[in-house]
Structure formats: structure tokens, C-alpha cells
Image (tube, rainbow, N blue to C red; front, side, top):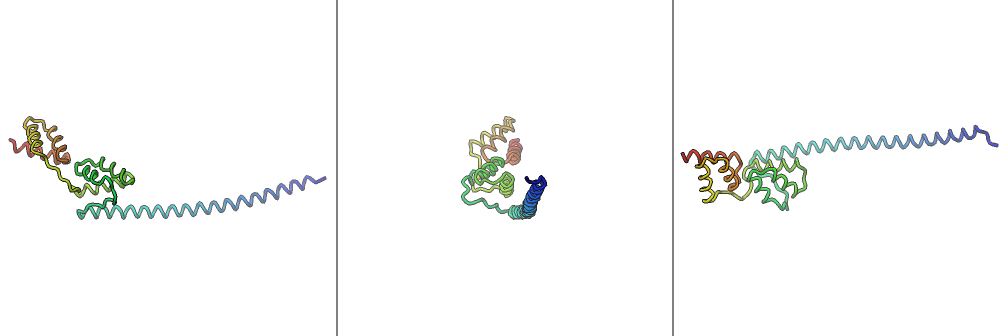
Amino acid sequence: MTSPYIYMLAGAVGYAVLAAIYRRWYDATARDVDTLAKSNHAQSQTIGTLRAENAALRSLVVDNGLTPPVPQGLSNEDAIRDEINRGRLINAIKLYRQSTGVGLKEAKDIVEAMAAVGNVGTKTYSPTVDTDDRIAELVRSGNKIAAIRDYRAATGASLLDAKNYIEELERNQK
């Protein structure tokens, strides 16, 4: 018959072996976590640096009156430029994101940089004779808001530009 102490001794040795195995696994996992945390921190710093450099380059491009580059193969480039020229930046941002798959902030920064340059496309908008007559009639009848709306629709002008144009037209009619 075996002594109960042998079973206790075997249990204690088994426990000690399991504890040693667990300690090695825990130490290795802790080292891996520390390594990953350091790597993640370094990558975060690199990303922050790259974002700052990107913003500085974009502002340099805009400050010098250049148009920021549009990715090659951008299928909606004309549509994006058209939306910018018409003052519809939100639509331009949506189109840019759909075409490139970039995030909202990056698309917003690029479209705003393109808009800051001014008329970024090759298309220009000018009212036709019929449009001029209709807008002049709206101004004469005192319907300034409709005149601004029609002028913007016909020319793609911003709200401020349309307002200034209609006010100038109003002054010239008096």
C-alpha cells in the first residue's frame, strides 16, 4: 500500500512543474506585449509626423497657387472639379471619397486645398442671354433671392459672388 504522502508529494511536484510552465508562458507573453506596445508607439509617432509633413506640403502647394495633385485614374475628376467650381464642396468631398477610397478628413483636406486655389477646372460658366434677361427681370421685380439662386444655378458661382453680382446689377438698374 502506498503512503498518502507520496500522492501529496507527486501532486506538489506536478503543481510546481505547472507553475514553472505557466511562469515561462506569462513572461514570454509580457515581453511580446511590451514589444508590441513600443512598436505601436513608434508607428503612432511616425504617422503623426507624416500627417504634419503632409499638411505642410498641402499648405505650401496652396500658398503658391498650385493645384494639389489628383490621383491618376480618378474617374470622377471632372465631376469633382465641377462641384468645387460650383461651390458644392460637400458633394466634391463625397465624389472624391468614392473615387479614391480615402478617409473623410483626407478627402476634405484635398478638396478644400483644391477649392482654395480658385477655379480649378478648365470649365468656365457664363450666363446665356436668356439667363441674363431672366435674372435682370427678377432684380427689377425685387425678387433678389430668386435672382441669386438662378445666377448661381447658371454660373456655378458661390453664394457670395452671386450676391455681389446681383447687388451690382441692382445698383446699375437704378
